[in-house]
Amino acid sequence: MATAPRRLLAGGQPEPAPWQEHQNEEAVGRAIRNSGIARDELFITTKLRVQDPGEGNTWRAFENLLRRLGLDTIDLYLMHQPYGDYYSQWRAMQDLHAEGHIRAIGVSNFHSDRLIDLITHNDITPAVNQIETHPFYQRQAEHDYMPEHGVQHESWGPFAEGRNNLFSDPTLASIANHHGKSVAQVVLRWLIQRVVVVIPKSVRPDRMAENLDVFACSS
Image (cartoon, rainbow, N blue to C red; front, side, top):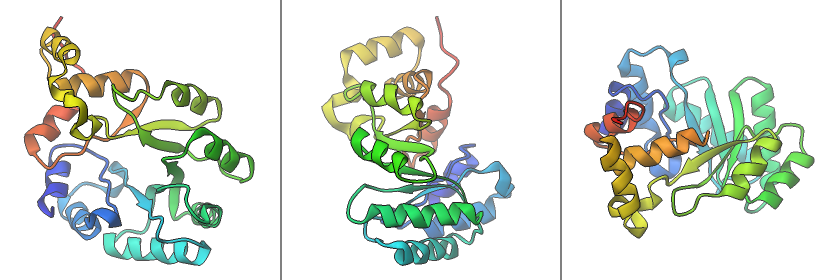
C-alpha cells in the first residue's frame, strides 16, 4: 500500500484520497512530502468515519488525521454515512470549515431524504454527495435533484466493484472497441460527460495512466 500513493502522484493524478479505514493516511502523507509537488497543486479528500460520533470525537478524529498526514488543511472532508448522531458530526465539520482547516465539506452515501434534511437544518450545504454510481446503478433521480440544491454528484465504485462482469459486458466492450479504448476508460468518460466527479481506485501504474487518458478517442 505504501507504494500506491507515490505511483498515483508520479502518474499525474492530483487527488490523493487518504482514509483511516484504508490505513493509508501516513503513506499518503509521506508520498505528498516526497513528491516535490506544491501543496496547492494537490486536492486532498478524506472521510470522517461513522465510528467517530459527536462533536468532540469529530474534532479529535480530524486533529489525528492532520497529524498522520503531516498537513495543516484538507481540501474536501466527507462524512462517511448518515448513521448515529451525524448532525453533531456535521456541526463540528462546519466549525472546522469556518476556522479554515477544511476548504469544503460533503457527505457520502446520503439518500435524498437525509440529504435534503441536512441541507434544510444546517448552515452549510454539502459540496458533494459521494454515492455508488456506475453503468448498472446510474442514480439518475439523485443526479437530477442534487444540482438543484447545489450539491455535486460524485461516484464511488465506478467499475461496480468488479460485479456484474462489467469489464466483459458486450455493450460496453463494443463501445470501447469502436473508440479504441478500454471498458474502464469508456465508463470514466461516460461519468465525466454526465458531470459526475469520479475517482477510480487502482494500485497499478499502467491502470492509473489509463484512467487519466479518457478524452482522445478514435472515431
